[in-house]
Image (cartoon, rainbow, N blue to C red; front, top):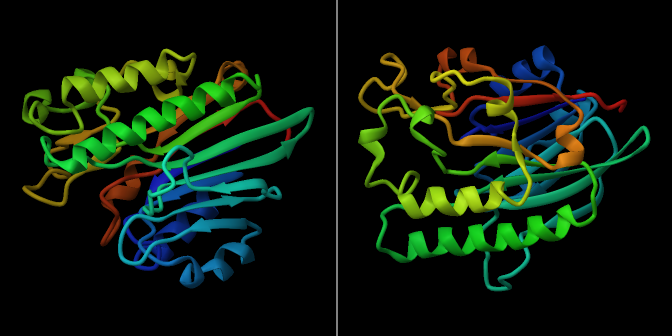
Length: 262
């Protein structure tokens, strides 16, 4: 079973890219972030034509998340618990039935948080605290769980081509990384790092200053697995080639293969 995540940076603008990648990679479940459209104008039909069920939490112009699944989506929850006043579209949870049980998948678009020392960073920290509380509760169920998405966190020096360039950025501040480690230490496995220790595993290259051409990248898109999901891990990867397509997203797809019969 292949589960993937991709910040597409406008699903309508990149629709041809997403469809081409889906046909090639054939993931069973895909979490999309930054779809940048309201729920009612999400382009469902092309994805349904490929056999995907669709769950969407959209927002005009900004944010927005979606889950595509070749299996029926059950128990879909829109939005992250813990703040009834949060109107930003950043979280979907869904369950798919697999042979022998269920697979719980969460699509996450964690706030960027820049500039630091502003309410934007406070919101990022609050969101991360809510995500930690949510994850702790879900881990208590002892089910296969995948947290997939754009976390806007550079976990460590190996996850940036030039760590020094990010020391004042909300993605790499010590508090950000410590809070992310607290989440991991609940018992999650970083699928990419569990399968490779390479220093060139980037998932994002800015549009500015020739970042792609210089391979000036960072790894901020993650797939985090509960112990029950990690036990099924057989592979993970980053489809870096997609960044070289014409008018690409600044992120690329990241995927994990689990030994699960869909």
